[in-house]
Image: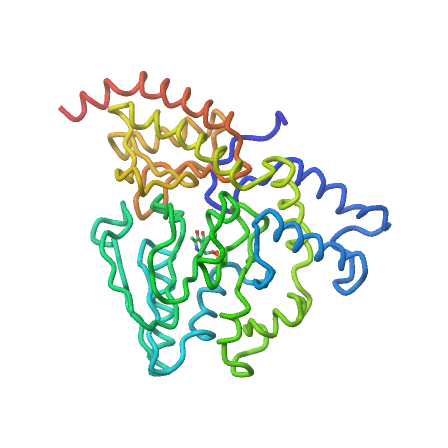
Length: 374
Ligand SMILES: Cc1ncc(COP(=O)(O)O)c(C=O)c1O
């Protein structure tokens, strides 16, 4: 569509265009019901179908085993990070956390606060804070009988990503906000996976939770507010109160799109890795650009932070790129520079065109950069 740009936003992020086009139609009249999707009762038969299809498609494409619940919950990923210690950390127990950047560090702060209140403990089992999170931790000290171990699968700001889940002995919880459904997931290896929807799956303010029945049963019943009680939410199939019906609808459409577009998450991964390789090749083959993450094995194929030789040139790059239709490329303030976020729905064409722009920008500015450094 000619009136759309290449949107490199880290989230809310570019959604699949066919999904947005379908949503436009369904806002007016959903499947001939004479009502728009926003107007359907959350307990009516039309919405029953929406929820059933969203769950079935999610289970199918994600290969979610039968003994795992799929929950569509409100409040984004942060609400999950806050609810997890309240649900699964009991007095006297220790929870392991791996600190790989802001979202993990924020979760540690919240868990520590809660642990203090109830006489439990938080163990930071690994951290790469000392190198400004430009790689994953190299050493881990896990608790043998921990309540759980929480890690962030893909670090949206710093651009690192676990290729395989960490080797923690405790029930493993993964924050997959920025790489959910971008590759096959080893669900059985996890007690729980969660993520905000606004990158790969749908609108902001919504979370997807995949949790094993076995782990769910370890949460104490009737001690939490009802909205924060995973068992209540599972029993009520995400409809304890009025859920965000539009978010669930849109996530359902995205699952359908993933099935049509890729067929399998293996295919999605190939597509995503190819896109990232186009950009990393351009960065690595140039003396002008550099990647924040140098350790190749730790690099994310979803979020790629990179920079030019100077902060001034970074600013200029972002401005000129924006004027050419490559938007939201500014890096997070924690590292500056640029960040290209290229989730499932971001087209390969956008990566190819950005590389052309990068070459032109380099040609135009490399000599000035050298002159100013000398
Ligand atoms: C990895 C990760 N975890 C958690 C969050 C927080 O998500 P939310 O804003 O949905 O609470 C983000 C947001 O960007 C994220 O990237």
